[in-house]
Length: 240
Image 1 (tube, rainbow, N blue to C red):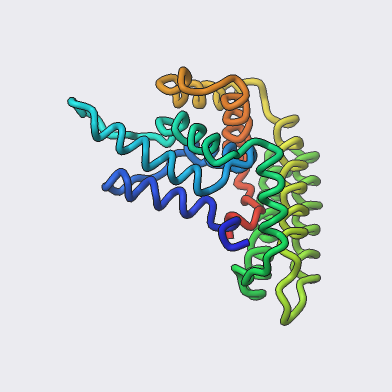
Image 2: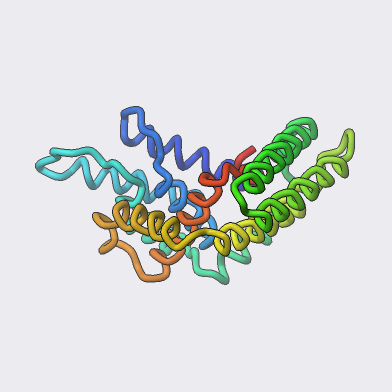
């Protein structure tokens, strides 16, 4: 479980370490990490692919620029995943084996409850802003989501850590419902703007990626930008 929740932070730390310079991951980079997670690519494969990408870059005779995006590492991340037998069936069996092993809970009860309560408050605020901007349907959906998250915080036991996998499934499902609501309410101009952003970011690396990879990345990027636009917090425990 601990590695499950460290997926984002360990990838970010590996990228910064390999780059040997302060670097903030872009919205496109975060969307790419989410697409890797969604595809079931093991953390170890991602880290190995990043390290190999930087090693290959350093071996080039002329290095005028630095690696400025995780998308540069896409091909070697996927190659590492294939080496580790990260096909869908094997990934599933590995996940089941991990679930069978006992592990120490990565979060304290207080951390989880505080995270849920903060998100509920942020959802209430976003609902008020949506209502004030003339989007009553979005406001209602955000308000319902806030109530759902607040109820989840209230159900958390006072001493024992709740079932994190079940809680994560519920929060992920709620995020998807909100994504659908925000997408339906978005104007054509706003969606076009977000798609131009992802196109610009992908342009130098598109040739390295397959059609399904690009589609997954675009979907995650759109979700992140919609949440940012409406100031909706990410609900997944990955962001705790």
